[in-house]
Length: 304
Image (cartoon, rainbow, N blue to C red; front, side):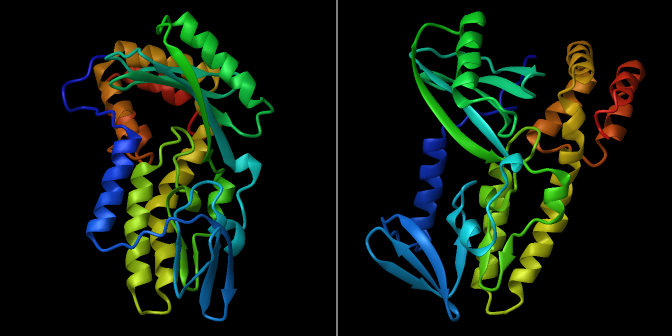
């Protein structure tokens, strides 16, 4: 599927994270190069114990990923069923101008190849409770690299957990408390189908900063309500869709529809890009004028 220049950019996470870090420094952030190992309350103060001492603060934001220490100490950790495992290889010395995706049925999920200037990032993602080991997932990835003839560059492995919550878990999601907020992956704000979460991390991070800066004691309640209404409601729809999304009947129809219809491709590309919300997706497919294709997709019942 060809893309026009500017339709999609692949950005290095090192460069992206460095840009955010530099922006924080420019805005006056103070960097403490220590590792947080525990968090506790002491009256109205949070005590963060690090590998070098302690830090006291009246307010706290947890932006520390799926295994968030802040979540574990002030709320509760994610259940294994609400996590995905992403693992694979960086294929060094090989690159491309193509993004390759393949939907999988067993285990349910997808496998990808994203080009970087000096290497390919190839990986696989599935729910953590699928009873398949990280090594087995990497073996699938290695076999796929060979089958797709993506090159014979050197391989270096990577792995990380990603929140991938059920609709029920989104319904009882804790994102804040008195004096503290969770943002991004730590808050569970990740699309459970695509496992994309950077946009939600930036959005919730801004809201969390505004909440912490407020002197209003009820600001954390408004943060939770805003996250619930503007982010979690959309992700809950995705969670309801996920159970049918990776079924063979739907994936086969989806691939056929993408191959046959530019209009269906536009709708689904908008879904990936974030410009087409899950709310209204069925109607957007029905409006493509590709009545037969859209009807076959809708009859697959992946959206229930």
